[in-house]
Image (cartoon, rainbow, N blue to C red; front, side, top):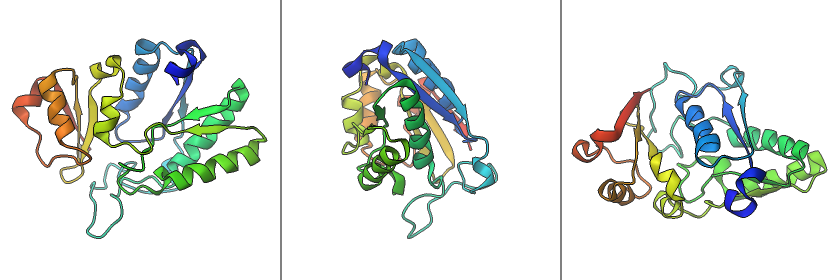
Length: 212
C-alpha cells in the first residue's frame, strides 16, 4: 500500500482483542509510525471478544495445541478477520479510501477459514452492499508462503524479524532481527512450518520467548 500510494496516503488499523501476544500491537505502532511513517495509525480495543468465544489465543488457562484430525489449532478466533475487515472498511469509507489491505494467506493459513480467498471475495461483496461503497480488499500475500513473503519484504522490515508460535510447547518465538544472512536462511528453510526446536546457537542472540 505504501509503495502504491505513498506513506502519507496510507492509514493503518491495529486491533487489541485480548490476544496473548498483545506485544504485536506495540510493534504495529512502531512499524507504522517509526519505520514507514504512514499518515495515520489507529489502535482499536475489542475487549469484548473473549466474552463471545473461547480459544487458546484469548484464554491464558487453555493450552495451545492442534488436536489430531483437527483442521486448525485451537488458537483460531472465530470470525476474527470478518470483524477486522468490517471495521477497517467502515473506517476506510470515513476516510474516503476505497482499498483495504490485509496480510492473509491461503497458502499459509493453518486452516483458518477466514484466511481463504473465497471468504475475502464474499467479505468484499458484503461490505460493498452494507456500506454502499466500492471498497476493494487487497491481499498481496494470498498465494505466498512465509518464505515467499519474506523475499518481497522491504529492507526496513528485516529489522523486525519474525514471530512464530510453537503450538506443541505453547511458546511464541519472536526472533529479531533476521538481516543476518545465516539466520535469514535458517528461517527460510523452515518453509511453512514452525520447527520443533529452534537452533539456539543461531538464534539465541536476538531472540526472546513469550510463554503463553
